[in-house]
Image 1 (cartoon, rainbow, N blue to C red):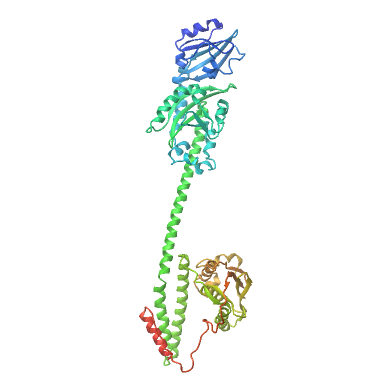
Image 2 (tube, rainbow, N blue to C red; image 1 turned 90 degrees about the horizontal axis):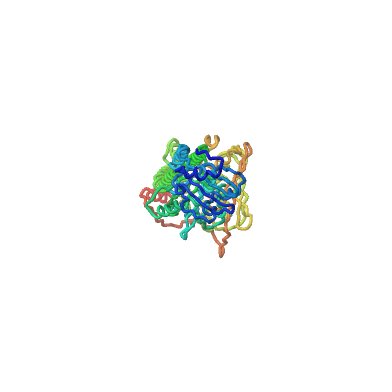
Length: 575
C-alpha cells in the first residue's frame, strides 16, 4: 500500500509518480476541478470538469461533506476487474479523491470469492429449476414454487441477497419479487410497482455491462449466464455494498440478477443457505416422484380390481346356468315315489347344498356387479302392503322352525309406490335372514313406517347376541364376519351388498347394537306414491289358480337345452 505524505500539496506528485494511481480534485460545491493519473484504469476517463462529480461518480455521494481530513474507503471493484483502495482527503475547502491500485494485495481474496460464487452457480439452484421448468414464469411463478413451505422463491431471493429484474421491450427494467435490504437503500424507486428503472444510469458501473448483456440476450442460442464481475456501490447513508450482476434468459424473458457479495464468510453462509434450499427442493422432487409412483400403483390396482369385477359380472349367466340344472334335476328326482328314505335324504342334501351354493354365487356376483358399476335401478310400480305381506309369509315359517316370535308393523291397506321392488326385497331378505340366523330365542320384527314427504323407514330388529360397537363399521366390509358369523356360516357379503344397494337407492343403512342387546338395522328411502288409475282386481304378486278341470297349454322358451328339458318335465309332472 502506498503511504500518503502528511502535506496535501505533495499528493498530486505521489499520484502521478505511481503508474497505477489516479486522483480527482473537487471544490467545496462538489464540482470536478481537475483529475489525473491512470483514471482510465478505473473507468473514469470520461469525466468532465466543471460538472458535478456526484453525477459522474455516484459512490462519492454523501462523503464530500465529511469532516474527516482523511477518510479511507475499503477496496472498491471498478471496471475491468480493477480493485483499488480509495482515500478521500480534504484541505481548505478542496477535496481530493485518491485511487491507489490494490489489485495485487486483494487478488487472493477476489479469487476465493469468485471460486465460491462459481461453485454456487454450478449448482441446480431454485433459479435454474425455474429456468428449466416449462413456462413457469408465464404462470406467474407456479403455485408449486410460490406457496411451498420453505421454498417460496420470492422469499428465497432476498434472503440470498438476489434482486430479480426483467428487461422491458421499451427499455429499462422492472423489479420482481421481494426486495433485499441493500436494494431498499440503493434504489428505492425500483420498488414501486411496475416502475421501469434505468439501471445503467442508477448503477454507473452497470452501463458497459448492459451493452454486453444486450448482445447476449439478442443471441437466442446463448445459454447459461453472462456475469459482470464485482463492483461497489455506496448508499446515501454511507453503507457500502459489493455487487455482481448476471444476465440470463428464463423462458424467453430477459432477466438481470444483481447480487450483494461481502466476503468469504458471507459467501459460505450464502452457499450453506442455497445448499439447504437445494436439499429441500430435491427432497420435494423425491416426494413428488413417490406420490406419482403411488398414484400409478393405485391406478394399476384399481384397473386390476375393475377387470376382476367385470369378469365376475360377465360370468353371471355361465355360473348360474349349471347350478340351475343341478337344482332342477334334483327336484325332478324327488318326485319319484319309489325312492327309499336314504335316497330321498341324499337328494334333500344335494338340493340344500345346491341352494346354499347358489346363494353364495349370487352374493359374489352381486358384489362384483356393484363394484363394476353395472348395478342399475329398475324402478316400477308395486304395492308396499302386498310386499310386506309376502315378506312376512316368507320369514314367519323360518321363525316357527326356530321357535321365534314374528312381528310385522306395516301398512294395513294397499299403498302403491314407485321404486325398485327387487332390490328392496333383496335388502330385507339379507337383513331378516341374518336376524333369524343369529337369534336363538326371542323375537324377530320388521317395520315399514310412513314418514311423510314420500319417505318410508324400513327396520329389522332381533333379540340375538348383538354386535359390539367397535365392530359396527367392520361388518359392512366385504368378506368380514364376526366370530359368531364364522360359526354360523356365510360369505360375509350380505351386509356389504345391502349397504351398497341402499346407497344406490338414495338411502343409508345404519345399525344400532351392543353385545347381548340385540340388533337393529334401519334405513329410509324415498318412494313416490303411484296409485293405480282404477280399481285393481288382483295383484300381479298373488298366485291365481285355474278353475277345476280347466286345461292350459304352455310354451317353454330357453336358450339352454337342459333348462327346456327340466321345465318340460316339471310341467308334465303337474299334468
